[in-house]
Image (cartoon, rainbow, N blue to C red; front, side, top):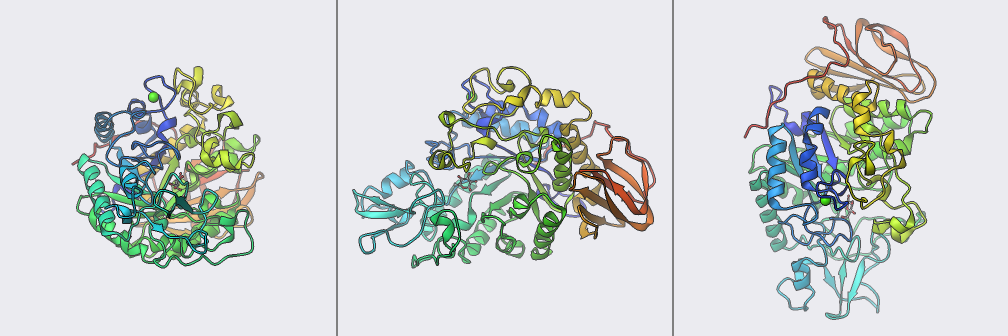
Length: 555
Ligand code: GLC
Ligand code: CA
């Protein structure tokens, strides 16, 4: 699926993240599963996405809901079987949709046979597959903290040493300096690529290597938790991780058109330089996340700064990614909008991620405007939410069942779902959104279709268009074609400027009665409004026309 510009699906396409427990339940046990996803592929095709990224589906004791894997080559029974997965893959490919798996290999589950063997004795054959160490002065080996709270070292009484866990104690960190661990990872990657998956999302790739000498992290003054009061220079972000990433890239490149996207996690405000380093100028990850956009305030200036910083640090060989939500963060419209402006801001947010230069990652439910759910204490699932309750740090609110219809449990499952459904589901659901021409879902579809129709939106360069307060403006340019995007982040109309010397044809606008054309110069963008226009092109385009040809994945 390459094209004349040599760009591939992961550059030109839109990627949709599914949290499998919460997408669709096919067998009525209250937990989403693979057959459920297969049953909803037509919905995803109609939305227009090119690929889906599945949060982990491997067997797991679910201490961190799949981010603690006990068998890298299997499928968790609650999600189905390997056959179910093969069917999902084939059905997705038949609709032109790729599948990206989550590869969680900074750590495994403590119940993975590797760790069971590793912890069995100091002389075990797999002892050095994990990071074991003697204590220091009667305490742990150094001052490292677990990102989920508490110290990062767990004492193992049986073998009388500490092991490292950057997250939960049920998630021991693998020792990536051990060539046998690398070999095992290569075998896992090769196995799934042979099954036919199209790529991997690498969980916390910037954690993989730790300082060899296990030096203490320097401390800093401010921060809520002990973890936040350290500079993470020795327990993560080691520069040599980039070599590891180069090696992974070379491995994956043995299969055509596969993709690696890495989660380079850094606390707010994000760290574009760090994320950029993982691209290794085109020899490392195909894509990396930087969450600066997600962590931005709702303002033209903040978003503009985040985008410009990301554009600045990426060399021409590197392709940006943009995302406003995932399974670890509050939902986009819960962060940014109120009852009064939600419908409009949902359109602005969609227009932002879908018209920037880079690969958009959408989070399931975002396209219908799903909101965070207030999960009562008795129904908390996320270990983070439980340990920090009543602080709102838990991630359950953004992981609740997809709202398909106004039926019981939002059409997600006939049974009580594992997490509560949002009480707004009779209003906010796919069925209703499909029937409403003014819905957010229709707007997402419209914009995704626009990306398909307009190569300039997929491939064009990005240039900021200076604007007055409240408005973010930029121009995308490709082979003589020019599209301007104006986004008003304020809840009052704002003046904005379109380049003069051209007549602009409106491609999409959030206004109730959009004009077909606007002249260059100063114009007004409505409150919380969007205007996307193309310079000087001839034929008019009808908004709202569905219907589009898609090609199957050819391999
Ligand atoms: C990543 C995942 C998160 C998980 C953590 C540990 O940040 O996105 O969900 O809990 O890694 O694997
Ligand atoms: Ca199920």
